[in-house]
Length: 227
Image (cartoon, rainbow, N blue to C red; front, side, top):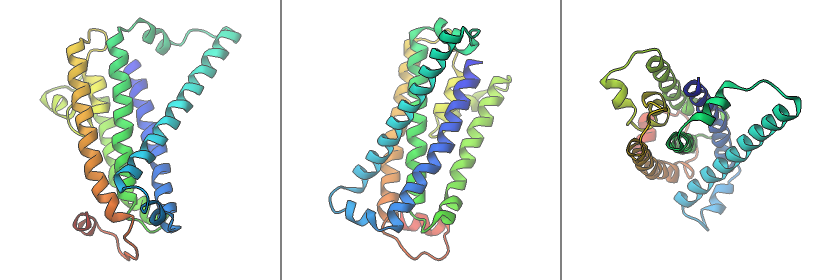
C-alpha cells in the first residue's frame, strides 16, 4: 500500500507540475522575456533555478496538505490512515530512499519537460513535444505496477537503475521493511548521477531551444540536430 501510494504521488507530481513548467517556458519564450534573462545568467543556471523553484513549491504544497490532513485527523478524531501507520513503522533508511526517489524523479522529468518545451512556439507545439515524456512516465508507472503484481526478473533490476525509470521502479523493487543503508546509498548514488547527466543534456537542448523561433513543423529529427 505504501509503495502504491508513493508511486501514485510521484506520477501525479510529474504530470501536473511538468506541464506547468512547460507552459512557463513557452510563455517566457513567446514574450521574449527569455532573451533578457539570458543576458544576465547562463541557460544552465536559468534552467536549474526554474526546476529548483518548482521543487521547493511542490515540497511546500505537499507539506501543507499533509499538515492540514493531520490537523483534521487530530481535531475530528478520524480513523488512522494505513499509509501513515505504515510510515510510522518503517526504518529510517526507508524514509531516505523515498525522499531521494521523490526529489530525483521530479527533477529529472522537470528538466526534460523544460528542455523539450523550449523548442515550442505555442501551447499546441508544447503539448506535442511533451507527449513522449508523458509516455515514459506512463511506462514507468505500469512497470512498477507489474513488479508489485509479482512480475519480476532481471528487467526489473535494469529499469530500477535506468534514467527516468529508477525513481519510480526502485521504490517497488526494494524491500522497504528490510532495506539496508548500503542499498539506500547505491540507489541514491545512481539517481543523483542520473540527475546530473540529465541536467547537462537538457541544458544543451534548452540553450538552443529558447532562442529558436519560427519552426513551422516540429520534428524530433530537427530537435536533435539543433540540440
